[in-house]
Length: 448
Image 1: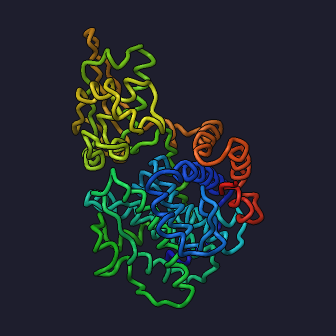
Image 2: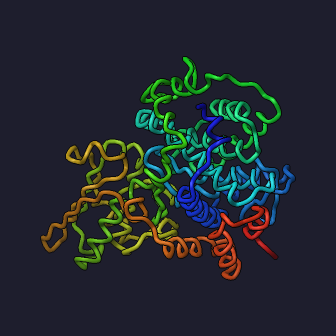
Image 3: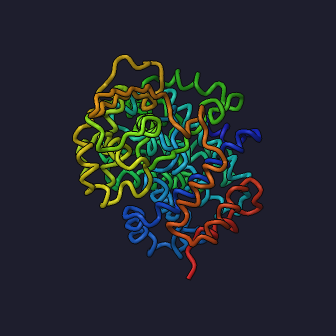
């Protein structure tokens, strides 16, 4: 079975659709939250004036063609780094997937069920590529949200366009040549741009394939294809083995989706969970902390690259800042990364006493970015330790429906008034029952 055949023929079960529905709801919320952010507003200002169409640009009064809407919305979805994660693909899967799929569903007049099926298809393809290509692909500097995300989102777009298997395979091959994204740009506005570009390029790939653009059948696994050029851990034979259980084993259920409950890099979350728990249990405050030592896996330092962040974007990729903010404020939210927090002398004092190092005693079989060994030394001589494996929101400790609803509303009110945010929550909580995605997408626009 090719990826294209799977994309157009797969029949996800209700449990896979339910998982997809939660991911779509969460992503719509973080897109509303990210819409006012500088990266999102810059993209809208540059790309939407020259575009006309029927697709909603979230958080604005503008409509655009599907590719432009996917571009703007994908950037907004990733602007706060509050969107979900998958530790097999090592990507934020939903920002590109949802942005491309919603735009394609609007263009096609598709149902919510069709949207969910398209999401699942894209997620499964990204998972198989992740199992084949990571960790080497990620370690070499590629941002999987953009590289693998472009391909998965192209498969989703192809499904919603109603392409046949051959055309879907061409869409995936086109997407392989569009895929890009460098981790060196983490901590800048380019990181959320990656998600926007992936969503836009996915839509373009599907539309070009629909129009008859040709592409290599070996674009992924050929001698000069995607796997070879982008530092895959394994080769095309391994990809074929990973594809063998498509449609019988569902990555979205076995691996699951990690919902972020902190708007910072996922690599900080195990530490933040453990640190906040210790703070509640032991009653210390920031001024009580003499030192914080964080042991991590070898990949985490390639992601958390800003020890002395200069702005809020860099702070999301700074273990010293995130740990200090948690110790001082007892919580980490959207406002943790505003200018006031960065200038807070109490946070800065603790930040200087946080050290991150690679800890060889951590389980090498665990997925990257999911473990931390924490040691907090207090001024009264106490030493507090905690081994963190995963965090709240991970598939093993999933976010509850109430968690998702609270997060959605807290995000949505950054763009919509409370009544509109509540209407959007109710509608998108029932995405699988939508007859036409266009009706519910309209709830995501600003009103005068």
